[in-house]
Length: 465
Image (cartoon, rainbow, N blue to C red; front, side, top):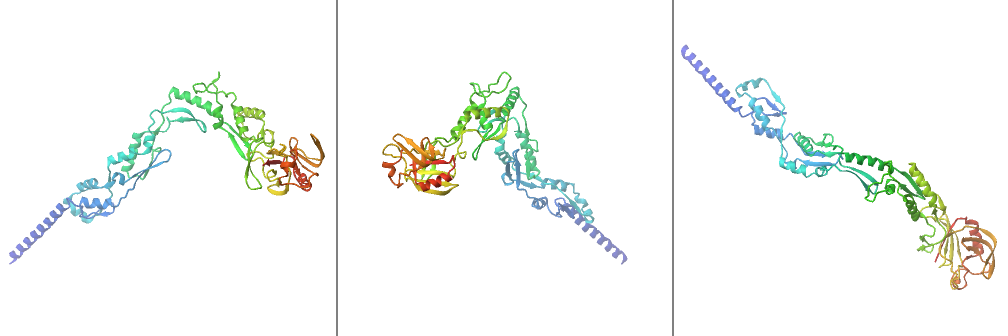
């Protein structure tokens, strides 16, 4: 009985051992293609999972939208992940990890936890990346094999075009961008990565740089003409035209190797300034009291630059590198300078309406009918913008066949003036056409008294039909 029981125990023991061995060997074979018990990778529980399953789980943890590339001017260029079919792949790293795993020793995992970190391999379409990179505009802009260095003239004066600096090393740029993509970098700055270089100076380039220093110094001018509210700079855009050139367009240097001022250049500038801002005798657009804009030509009122003085000033100021705002000297000045030299204080003589108005600071102070020159006798008062250049009282006006006493006399152009006319009892209407003056502006006594007291010397007189 005892032997039979012992035999049963032995048989049971071997059965248990056999079952254990079968289970152990079975798990050993199972873990040859799956991760052992207690395996964590990048925070993902991997026990019993295949490489494909773990690869999927790990890849879902990563997200890459693409890379932004900045050139030296901080212009941004984009390659998205979708453009190059960008993906993360842990398969290679997982295979190596699994190869290091000894499936026959899986029982060791029952007493310890394996928590490891793996880095993925980035996978993308290399041909698509090549196309995206080559199609970026900074690639074509960076191709400056000639390394041009030259002095050119622009609207702002002469400028140095230096294309030997900041040349893009395209191969290096491609290398660093591709490396950044592989590292899943969100952006990269090509200049910081050393993708730009400068070409070596040739002898010809060195001569150009020396010439540029002369040009830069010549056109380094900071004079500003102030005419009324207008500011007219005399800067590089102006004085670049003052440099003397040879027939072939090259700079004409003197015996000392210096640039030369072109004869008549300063005079030409002052002439253009006078043409634009001199107003004596020029046509002006004037808003009349009757409501329309009239074109008024001629007259003696206005501004006129003193060209001789200005040529002398500007030549000296330019040679001395003056840096200043200059108010020019005038041979004749109006009440104000600039395009609008009439302002808002003036006398308006409307010879069609036979009315005269006096505005003081824009406010109408006097409104009166008048009688102007007799048009039937070809003595019509001439139109133009003139000014009150004299004021007298108790004056005898003399002319061919007449001598007339007036209480107030304000000449505005030659012997044509504004005065009272005691011999007249009516004014305005069509009187001037048949019984007008010898050219003067006859004004009622009461109105003339006010005008004479209020109007100052130099006040513009706008006369028109």
